[in-house]
Image: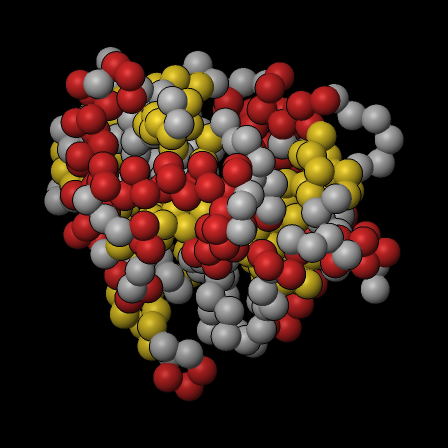
Length: 368
């Protein structure tokens, strides 16, 4: 056993937050996984070869925390279960333009683990394909939040404040506290005096649409709720208050019924790169990762295209940014999507369609 793992296990919080990874594990978006080398990786999307046995699966993910070796900038330091870690994304995020964030991260992943430099599907262009059998465990959203709630009931003041803010936010959104989970570093035990909460809301697609549309109205009309960070306005982030102090809520959304997930199990074949324009006709799935937008009045390389076209943003950097009526321009990869359901001998194709795919922040943008 890696000595770093042994030291992590000695922390009293560790067994409260982690769960094992096995054949029954649901690989959901925005979840932390701990590798046997001591690194923490963060999942993206829902399609992680669900039709294959665990030993053959790879998690589409980002490497975020590695054991600290040597001196690093203070903003990149993190204590996880009593051990010193380096956040390898912070330096890039704090010093580089947003459109360079994912490409530079990818190069860093291969420095951490050269064996990850393998063939990747088009939607995972800037992701690490991490072998699932390298995981010690994972930190599911709702399990981690329950661990924080229990610690609040035992007298932990930071945990109590988080619980109070979740209760207030549930009332604001018209849902129950039980529909919340937690992501980000809070899900791996570092919840003391947080500046922001990466919450994960579990709901039906219909309810998520209602919540997201409510947040658009809220942040459009309440200056005290608006969030500006990294030089941009985040329309579905908002401020919440507890004990007179404010906390930034950064919501993720998770399909409570995975049958409602459009890209749970699929293949993706690249056809070519195109210049794209179009107008958003349906933003029902715009707050998820991957973000899926239905476009109308589409042009590809300047030529009109009949009907509608799905635009897939396979990254988390623009969740919630685009809504119905927005005109978008940019470059995308034209892809052939094939969707599947079932496993093993029962796996069957459920659909096939052409779509436009982007994998980086700024590949598309609102037309002036």
